Length: 376
Image (cartoon, rainbow, N blue to C red; front, side):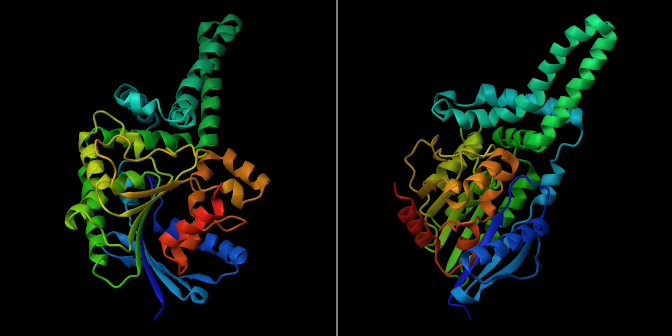
């Protein structure tokens, strides 16, 4: 029997890839972590956890610790809401951006760092606006040379080529689907399949409170941070406002503020208010270099009541834990940067994901170690 037993519930972002991808990613990063930290973290095989989850065991004999890692599966739900038709994707993207622009609570949003606001509009500008403008500008000289019909065809072809290049470079189709899905959530049109799945997850987590774990973590990544709000609200209500002392919420690359600051998201606001008033530990890690994250913004900034939840918010400090050349190369790829929260680096941070999910140190001690290491 290990001395330290941890339970992790992991909720991915708006990603059609399921447990197999994330199990492989964790195993690859654990192998790197073992070489860097001189540890012996081992990963077990995947096993089904009906009705929706997949689990595997993480063990570290040197730390005398064991983690039961539960992947909360909603990739099938994501695929059901994955817009496939390019024309539908374009039409719905324009509508979603229009909704966000007119319905954001701009007195609050204007206080966000410019980089945060730029990151939100970057996918739409890069994949929709710029290619269209480029095509229009090309049409003028081509029309003079080839006539307006052939000139229009040539300009459209080149504009499309530019658009496809940009899309591939920044994973634009995924980012646009991300914006569309969150527009749906913000507008209080939470689909029934999404809501039912989150209820099932909250019940699964609630049941673990009665088991003999030394630590329980709900870890969310990207869009999973938004989906954590209805889950957390249900847990808090069931426990009378205070969650167990050995439970913590971890949000990585969070985008809660994306719909937390929309004027039409009354239902989400009510849930966010309930979460903000809960008594629990909350670690939020976000990087300004991450193009799909709203970093450094209190998730409860739009709430009417002062937040009661014990939030520790920080940057991952990737520049400190990897070589300068590696850091510069990784930050240029915004899509890959968004997944670096789940990766390990040349030097191990106290909040390295493999470290906090496999070792024998509880999250509270890891936060303290990170603070001590990064003071000043």
